[in-house]
Amino acid sequence: MTHKEVANSIIEQIGGKENINNAWHCMTRLRFDIKDEKKVNYSALEKISKVVGTKYQSEQLQVVIGTDVADYFAPIAKELGLDEDGTQSSNEKKGIVSLFMDTVSGVFGPIVPAIAGAGMIKGLMAGLVALNVISNQTDTFLVIDMIASGVFTFLPFFVAASAARIFKTNQYLAVAIAATLQFPTMTNAVAAGDVSEFLLFNIIPVPVFNYAGTVIPIIFAVLALSYIYRWVDKIMPQALKTVFTPTLSLFIAGLVTLTIIGPISIHLGNLLADGVAWLFSISPVLAGIIVGAIRPISIFTGLHHAMTPIALQNFANQGYDMLMPMMFMANMAITGATAAIYTKVKTKEEKTIVFSSAVSGILGITEPALFGILSKYKKAFLAATIGSSVASAFISFFGVRLYGYILSSIFSLPAYIGEYFIFAVLGILIALILSFVLTYMMVPAATTEEDIPNEINLHAVASGTYIPLEDVSDEVFSSKMMGDGFAIEPLDGSVYAPVRGIVTTVFPSKHAIGIRTANGIEVLVHMGIDTVSLGGEGFDVLVKEGDSVTTDTKLAQMDLAKLREYGKATVIIVLITNMDRVAKISPIPSVEGQHAAGALLENVDLI
Image (cartoon, rainbow, N blue to C red; front, side, top):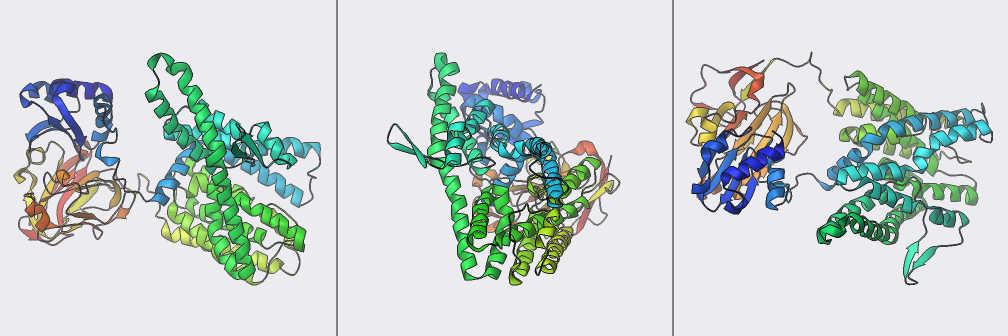
């Protein structure tokens, strides 16, 4: 049965939509506030595929599903007209930077092959031109450059289609917004330079900007489109939706993009450029530190284009520029961090992607490395930023400069020949080596099947008394509907990880945390019984999704006094939820009684 079919069956056996006041879910259970329990057909409900068990407690009907409960709640929420994300929507754990980078990574992931291929061609051609092997004025160069530059010139189109998938809106309308930004009326006005803005309805200014190769404007434009489309579709009569929903959505989103989103994004870039110019006026070394630090993130967001006019103006005004060498250092730092990831990944496919991205980076095209690799490894991104900052500060101290515009690739080295050449070479080595070493030290290696043991150990999550799972007062846990494991009655509120692994889930109400081990075992740490109703009160979670944890890692702090004040049991349950992977769980001989946090309690043999 599909998720929707299961959801509809559950609603039907509960007594239909008219018998449900509200619905939500916790880590493993669907929870319903129902009008009349007598209308619930428990026998039929428990026969539904994926329903592990049912329970009526605290005036709630609980339907036990498992850790994939959210997949079944979504169609239930849609049917009932509720928030599809349930309680998770308003309590997102991710920080703004992580959320932003994850979104950009999701947008760019599918288009990395196009960027990587075009980047490789573009870098090689630039290198051949720099070495005077070919001229950039020949027809051959122009034809190949069309192949290489098309992706970057019309990058907004690629980003629009991919962003529409992430933001769940119409892809063709998203591409239409990108086409709006790069329509010849706009690009010709930019090229001519004699028009600064158009006047819409003779009142509203539409600024003229060059949006070719930009990223941020179109991502925010498609995000806006997703909300506009849903709003228009909601208010539009059914008979008019086919024609007028896309018409109004495109018109409104296009106007918002041209008048607000696009200009604001461009002004962000100009603000960055003005800041860089100001830094140079104070101290080149300070500029090196700061520009080197912000260069990787500016490339990542597409705001790096704002630096190019400053460099060109420097060439015109003083005959040289010190900003472009810093761009070179940033590219090399990004390359070094990417090269280090090659030593961390295991599969042939991953190594191929990382290798091509590193080669593209050393040739001056870093988008494949940034969007395809470093956005997934945030510590590597940090290492690249540090390497870029240190190397840029170094070359700034010695006054490294360029006397002509050139792509920042390894083939650009001949342009530095002269009194600053040795410092440029040393800067490259610093950028490459430092970012490589830092990434190698900070990013853990991926595991392969050969690395993974066929057993795990479950450790005490708190100092306290061991309780066999069957003795827990909650029937869902004691009957082992959700899996097997143990419980601890804690002496204090410190809660530690029972295994080494990665945090996969931190429930918004903070009472439960999911961890996945290297061998794929899903371990649930459930703090207290029926504590989801507290909405996070009494819990201070100290980890976030994606964190690596060991048995020494403190996951959370429980306020035991507050839980008791609310009449909640403070017992901590540790469960393995994918028991199909488990052959046997064996408690250690001396498991009864009190144990310190981190003590070995159970051995788990895997299938």
